[in-house]
Length: 180
Ligand SMILES: [Fe+2]
Ligand SMILES: [Fe+2]
Image: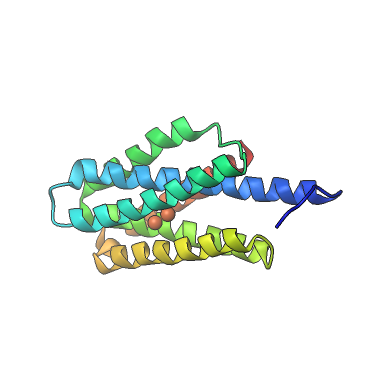
């Protein structure tokens, strides 16, 4: 528990605020990706799986919405952009078919898994409550990746190229959302 600010706390605070800002942005984007997928595939065979993942992302987002408010973190100014870009990515991959939607899920969830792992390592023994949240969410992101792999993500035509493009986009989104 943090009592009053001490000299040297500032940089830690700034670091943790950046973490919360980007995690909030990421969960916001993830929820929008699955909403975009459902807009296209909502009546198809994989809809229940996608809905399950979307519902978990909504819980992740609700958690970070509360954290942003509690800790007075400034959300990224890019939220309106992630609103559109997340939906567009979900809908566009879904329009290519259920396998392409699953390929998108693998690329996104693996990137988020690596991102949460880096944050967890960085927090070490500080911020135990935040760390516990990240570990729980990371477990669910890995579950999403596994669902997508089990549903033929890798059989999408052009899988490697599609996957590389989405990963690069996600890493760019992470870098921008930490700073802006
Ligand atoms: Fe999530
Ligand atoms: Fe996820």
